[in-house]
Structures are given as C-alpha cells and as structure tokens.
Image 1 (cartoon, each protein chain N blue to C red):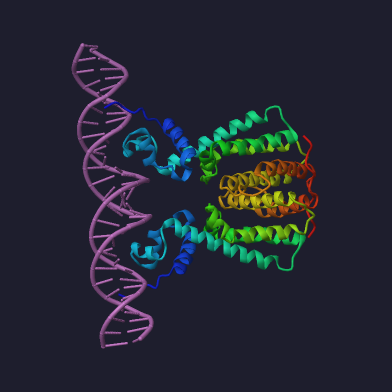
Image 2: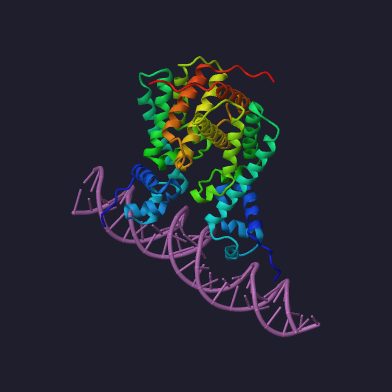
Length: 192
Length: 192
DNA sequence: GCAGTTGCCTAAAGGTATTAGGCAAGCGGG
DNA sequence: CCCGCTTGCCTAATACCTTTAGGCAACTGC
C-alpha cells in the first residue's frame, strides 16, 4: 500500500485548514485522519496526542499572525501602526476563523513563553512607542490593546455585531480612532 | 430503588458548579451523571442533549451576571457605574470561572435574543447615559466595553497577566480610569 | 390501596482517544 | 539489482462519551 507521506508539519497545516473550515473545536485526530484517508492510529507517530495537535495549530497561527503583523508594521508609526496591527488581527480572524480561535487557545506557561506570543508583545510595545507612555502605563496599554483585540475579534466572529446597526466595519474604524485618542491623551491615575 | 430527584434546574445548577470546579470544557453528561450517582441515560429525560445542557448553563450564568450587574448599578451613575459594572464581570469570572466561560459561549441568535444578554446590553447603555454620547457613538461604546470586558476577563483567566508586573489589579483600575476618560472625552471621527 | 404516570435503569450502537504490536514499503549497502 | 533494515501505516483492543429504545418500579392521585 502506498504511503501517505504524513509529517507533523503536514498534519498541523491540514489541521489548521480543517479548523478554518469546520471550527477549531471540531478539529479532531479522527477528522484529520479521514482527511488524509489514513487510519487514526497512524497519526500518533507524528503527533503526541490530540492536545499536542491543537497546541501546534495554535503555535502555527501565532507565528502566521506575528509574521503578518511584522510585515504590516514595517515603516509605520503612531496611529498608522496601531490601525495596521489592529487590522492584522481582525483580517486574520475573518480569513482564518479556526486558526484565529486556535491562537486564542490557552497555552501552558512554558509553551506560551516559547511561542510567537512574545513577538506579539514586543510588537505591541513597538506600536506604543509612537505614544508617550512611561511604565507602568505602557504595560497597562499593552493589556488594553490585547484585551480589546481579543474581545472584539471573538465577539465579531461569534456573530455578536451582525444583525444590528451600525455595521461592524464602522464601529471598528471608530474604535481605533478612539483608542488612538486615548493613547495620545493617556489620563493620570484618578485620586480615590 | 430511591429516586434521585433529578430536574432540569438541579442538573443545570450542578453543571454550573461542575464547570467552576473542572472547567466548562469538561462539563459532560457523564460527569454530571456521576455527580448524581445515576446512570447517564437518566439525564436525557431532563436535558435534550449535551449541547442543550451547556446552553442552559450559559443562560444561567448570563442571568446571574445580569442580576449582579443590576444590583451593582442601582443608585450609581457615571464612572461609579462604569466601575461597578466592570467589577461585576471581573469578580464573577474570578469567583465562577466555569460559569464565566459558559457565559461567553456562542449562542445561536434566537437563544441569544431570548437570553439575559439583552439585559446586559440595556444595562451597558444605562451606564453610558452618564456620558454624553449620541448614536451611533453609543453603540460603538457598547461594543468597546463588551469587547474589553470579554477580552480582559478571558486573558486574565487564561493566566495572561500573572507572572508579570504590574499586577492585574493595578492594570484593571487604571484601565477603568482610562475608559472613563475616553468616554467623557469621546473623539470625533478622524477625517481620512 | 390501586392505576397510571413518570423516573431511572438496562441494552445497544456509534464516535473519539490512545496504546501495543505487526507487516510491508522503500531506502542504503553490497 | 536485490537484500536487509528502518520506519510508516495498519490491525486490534481498551476506554470513555453520546444518544436512543424500551422496561420495570416508585411515586401520585383518586
């Protein structure tokens, strides 16, 4: 019988495609085996287990996303950079909903530390160099942007903003405006 | 044999507790049956299927959250109300991580429309009455707050902000400051 | 206390995850 | 060229979760 030519890389790539087609939650070792027309057990020489497969898809998505962000940020600063980075996340989510969900998967700390997640953090800080923020405000801002991007993309993908006006596109543009304004004019701590 | 006294309500409540203990993803019909010391098939007279169970847990969580928010908002306005609402979400997530994850579960449109989600939307708009926002900016702001709360709570629960300084508590307070400032001084659309 | 309902059980089938061990495809050396 | 070794994919088996069908016993109301 001819061999299927499985490798971890091909499996992960196919798993990512599967995720985009049927949703990250439906990515299963069995479904992937079907896709390669191979028995389920065969995958276990290339991937440790189901969790390992999903983790690798998440890592792939984080890499792709970081690559796109790096490309988009090159030569931009200030609001331009902010908008570029924001659009990278949103566009990726719309083009690759499954991968995008994977990128939001919870990783254990060591895996996360070795992932492209750290590039994301560095790039976010790079964007913030266009604004005048000292520590710890810069970290607060990193967390604000992370939360907002994560939340907006999740809600939009879940259909939260469809079927109501104004459409999501307009909100998105206006919210980037708003965040830009906030970062430019970052408030001092309130005195309680 | 004595009967276990199953009802949909008891199952959903126990399912919510189970979610808080082991995570929403691990909430399974089998695990719930074990918890009641009952055979798995017995649950199927009370709950349509696994998805139905999870949906009901989500609806419970949304109700609880809306009740808390309503209580917290009574008699408050402006930044006070904003902070109160924000803290409801965050505190709920910390006290009830499983329910909180359930509340973020994707619901189909009809279910969502019949859920306490609409109360949340109304209350968010009520909070925004303390700020001077016309439509469509009010809707943009609703979406901003929704995204931010959702994102922040997800990331914090996933451990995204632990093991780094400043601690999440401080960031949280400062970001509420920041959002308050942004809402008070909402920028006009940028002219592209 | 009896009849009817209904709640929980047994049985069974199908899907996913995972491990152990086997056979042959394809590569490298003679 | 072909022989042997590696290793890739397979069969087999176990375990768990989901879901449906049908049965018997425990409550409920008369």
